[in-house]
Length: 197
View 1 (tube, rainbow, N blue to C red):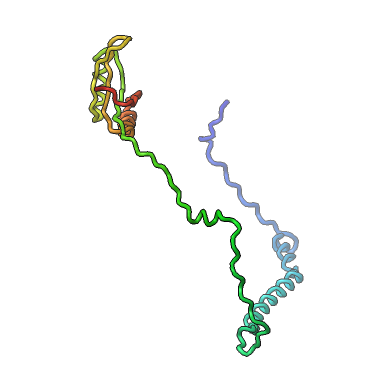
View 2: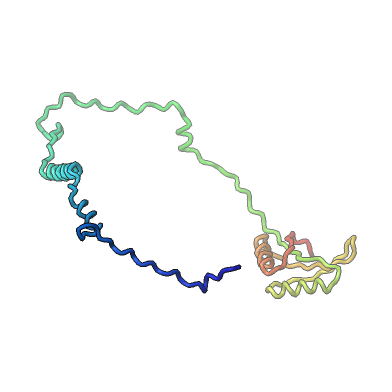
């Protein structure tokens, strides 16, 4: 059978055990304290600590009172005779390799191709068989603030209605618009060179 521990309540507190009295009216704790109080402090540890403190104090006193020794050098005394005159340095030798001089004086010529003019781009976001579907996508693109066109094209497969945006000056401008359309949920747009005229 299950037991409900929430209604059971907190456990009862135990009362501390009464201190018993030993022989002669003394408590057991007093006997124990008396035995510990009679011990001597560890002499060995006290002596080691005292020696360490004295050594530290002596070291500080020695550092404070010690004067630095003066070092006399031959340059400090003006009357010190020079035993020999310094030999002059030899002349700089000729370099064996010539590539060092060639690298210092070399000019690098780089052929930079002229930048080609940016070709206009178009972005096709859909191709539908029904004009109504193409117009729905054009309206969704217009809600994002971009103007698109629905162009009809005839191919080997029949008639198609293409939703295109553009022309854009370069690929970067077309990619910027494509990213904004993707953020709004319009995927599948492809960027091509402008071939409509």
